[in-house]
Length: 95
Image (cartoon, rainbow, N blue to C red; front, top):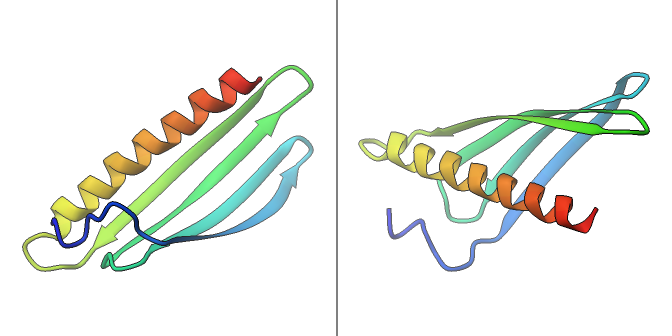
């Protein structure tokens, strides 16, 4: 796994947002990590009003590398969760 985990990896995230109903936005996204043979995709649901906002994120991580695929996928899922949580805490501090 060390060959995939570098100090810096170029990441490209593509998002497609659409208004589902009043006060609710949905997003379908894909993430590509340069040099990592895995696919990350998911959906977000953003709901809110003038008092609060909720962003629900669902991820699907898949890696088809023989023998290591599940470990790579688990690492990416855990890493993504940690980064989402860190971003959430930063946003809360800024508000």
